[in-house]
Amino acid sequence: MAGYRRRRRAQDTDYWPGFVDAMATLLLVIIFLLSIFMLAQFFLSQQLSGRDTVLNRLNAQISELTELLALERASNSELEDTIAGLQSSLSSATDERDRLLGLLDTQSGAVDAAGGRAAQLENLLDDEKQVSRRALAQVELLNQQISALRRQLAAANAALEASEAKESESQAKIASLGKRLNAALVQRVQELSRYRSDFFGRLREILSQRSDIRVVGDRFVFQSEVLFDSGSEEINPAGQGELDKLAEAILELSRQIPEEINWVLRVDGHTDARPLSGTGRLRNNWELSAARAISVVRYLIDKGVDPKRLVAAGFGEFQPLEDGDTPETNAKNRRIELKLTER
Image 1 (cartoon, helix red, strand yellow):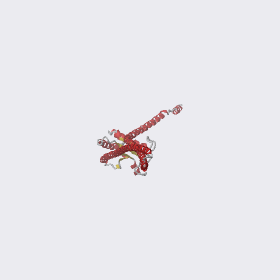
Image 2 (cartoon, rainbow, N blue to C red; image 1 turned 135 degrees about the horizontal axis):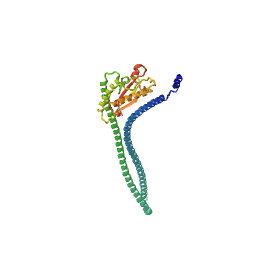
Image 3 (cartoon, one colour; image 1 turned 45 degrees about the vertical axis):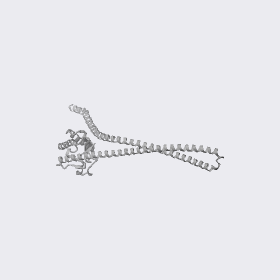
Image 4 (cartoon, rainbow, N blue to C red; image 1 turned 90 degrees about the vertical axis):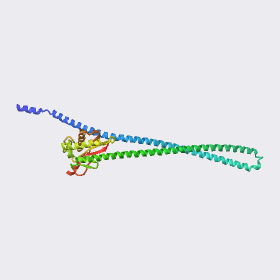
């Protein structure tokens, strides 16, 4: 009887609490991943918004100058059309004047040839004189019109020259603006490069005793083993000591860089190409690299670094320093990179 009761209790075991725990754990993992994604989106949107603001301001200035130049060119086109019309009218008036002068010369010749027959042709000559007077009046009128057209043509030419001079001035202003913008950008880059050099020099001084922390190009590189245990995104005690030195250097640098330089320190996480087991909280190398970069950023913020000066990014195994699958190559590719740049 007692054995039967024990078997009865074993058959009535309740699996529901275990199922609820598993679902709660899965929900927490999903919430954490969503938090990481939202944080990465926030930092990326902040970085892009700053660049978009500068580009929109420059584009607005260039658009305004382009519109002014287009208006000047339209005005030049209208003046050229006016000049062409005046020249055509002047040519027509000149042709008409020449025709009347030719007619007058013909009639005068006819009058001279008929001198011996003056009595017979007296009435005809009166008509010819009237025609001559009318022709002379028309010629005088045409001369006046030609003079007026020439004055208008001179005024139009003067307006065209003034418009061309103004257009040249506008183009010179655009070129000058471009040169000033380029000079300002070059100056910003040079200033940031100088502070980057000072920053890296300071890091070399305080971290010179470690061979696994080095400078590669324009980046300062920590091997992952300096900061993290294998497969973990939690900063180990030794890594916290190194990041304390880094935070001190960043705070010292932030007091030296002028406010108008919109700089950020980008923290990039990288892994080797070996895949994760997939049984832990992080499913792949991309998540591990992003989680490690975010851990470094959070630690620096806790040490007093301004959050708006920090950016976290994860690259997984897709940006290796060296190709290969040897232990030495994998160790070099597992790293955290720091890059001082402009937002």
